[in-house]
Image 1 (cartoon, rainbow, N blue to C red):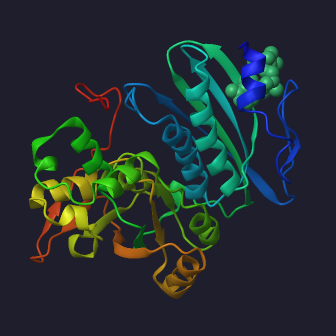
Image 2: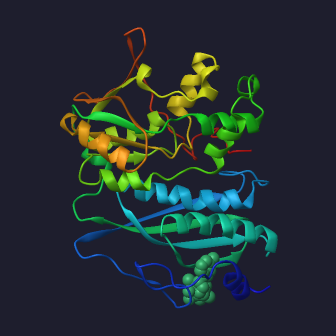
Image 3: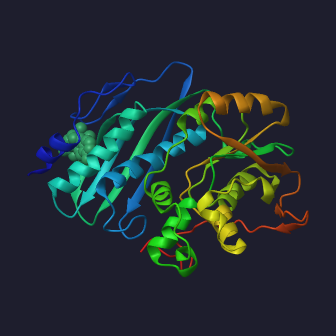
Length: 327
Ligand code: ADP
Ligand code: MG
């Protein structure tokens, strides 16, 4: 199977949705944007051994590759238009490609975000997706838009993906009790991009970010960009059943520094509480107020005993000494 046959067989599926004037096959795709909107663009790369295990289910990998990109659109409050796929493959494994493409296209169809182009080359397995979306001009949820005194909100809950990763790594504390194993694996391998919530929050919330590197670390990006601090209330953090039996230190590690959650963390003015609750309900996404932003630039955790402690915003850094890949 040659390069063009591979693309035709697995990736070409008609000309796409309303946002696509010209899809796969020419030198460029042509996207249609709605007047009065801005184009939102983001790329995410997934590398074997760094972002996923070599034996991961290809269907789940196709899903996750697009999901992490759609999650970036959600975090800007943008609606998807389409995406491109740059793929390096060690060989043309038809069964693998069929699984990968089916996971990819199923999520693309669910969000009306068609594949409009890409590049295919031989090399170590590497998946790079670029998503294109649109958001009403001036309504994007930027990281630098938080104001002191905002409520801090979280969609869904954090920590299960990290617990699943530690179980796959064979970490002892994660293996003591394997309740909700399937659910945790789903959270790690098939994250749900919170697009409906993100678009409902555009023009309503102040700042937002999607959680890829852990709640505290990603919150740190909002705080640094906005020049504010925050206090997280430990008792307000939703705790998944699978995390309940963990010793407190490990539970907090998963909740605050877990990574791979792909939930939305956002700030909104206190007088928008009802509007945020309506946006959450309309989008079918649970949200929870987990703290507030503060005028001083510190990040603190308010414990259940009423005492506060400094929280370190150590997100995942691929170039930090000793940063561990998945395997
Ligand atoms: P070019 O030589 O102009 O870079 P290519 O020969 O690489 O074009 O690709 C031919 C067409 O197939 C282009 O429209 C390109 O966007 C598309 N394409 C290539 N690889 C992929 C892929 N993995 N997924 C979707 N479309 C692809
Ligand atoms: Mg090319």
